[in-house]
Length: 127
Image (tube, rainbow, N blue to C red; front, side):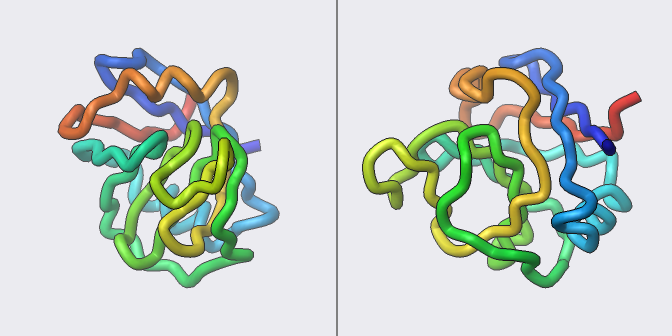
């Protein structure tokens, strides 16, 4: 299983697993763009940031599990979901529009609540 490391001063280092079989084109495109350094945007309990990658949706969906890593095509963005967003109904994690889920956070995704808009996020291949 392929893995990523997500780092920021607010959370330290978090590992994520990638779904290479479910979303192979997305995993490949994002993997080729690594390392990525970006500034976080927040939308409820979601962090997202543009990564300049263009890839067609694979099994796109609106509602995702907490801890999901997703690619949002309209914003060419990497998304981390850890709870409800302004589009959610109840406690679900709902994207603004369909996303491709390509991985998940290992452990408790609630640590991302500590990340604020503007915080630097670094995404790298895990060793």
